[in-house]
Length: 238
Image (tube, rainbow, N blue to C red; front, side):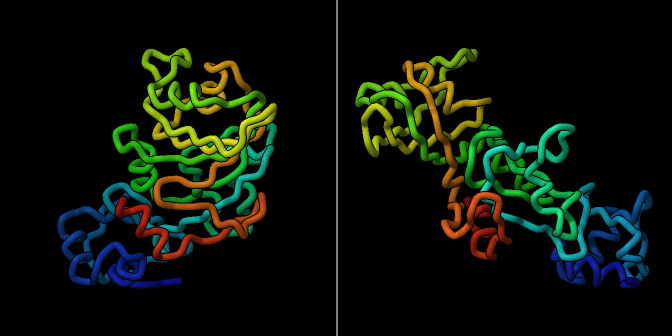
């Protein structure tokens, strides 16, 4: 479809018509490999790729999906052996440009955000931001108040530094314990390694929230939906 460049950018929420014209004058807009010169230029939305400050601009702007990740799906865009979380969204128009924000282990379920918004993803994943992630877990072994204290102090999981303080809440203590844990880092297999550090084993793990975004309980494993405008604002105004 042929459309004016400034209208396309305004519709994609890059800015108002007047703001967009200013961006074009400053050379911040590219059409394919060329710097855009005029706001009234016509582009083909099916063929042309538009960039604002090196970020791809989409016809409908950025898209955001909440996925209840199922076991067995890999948190990646491609994989030679296993189904990826992006594969679950193949019916969506821009699925090939989506990527998961962070990772969940192959056998971990729960909240995973998929988007094409690189800036938001960076802000959520940056170690300096300390975005809280909350998990529900089943643990083999009796979880004790001593474990709660150890998690709060930080644990040696084989890294250069101990883990940052985390909140371990015991829901049920028994041969199979139920817990909720809040961490603000995203180290490889972190929750599993933390429990290994106190001689226990995670047998089930599900992420239920990330920052201010909480998993929709209506979503079954493998199901997803668009984020609401309110949810998107929550992520951006952390």
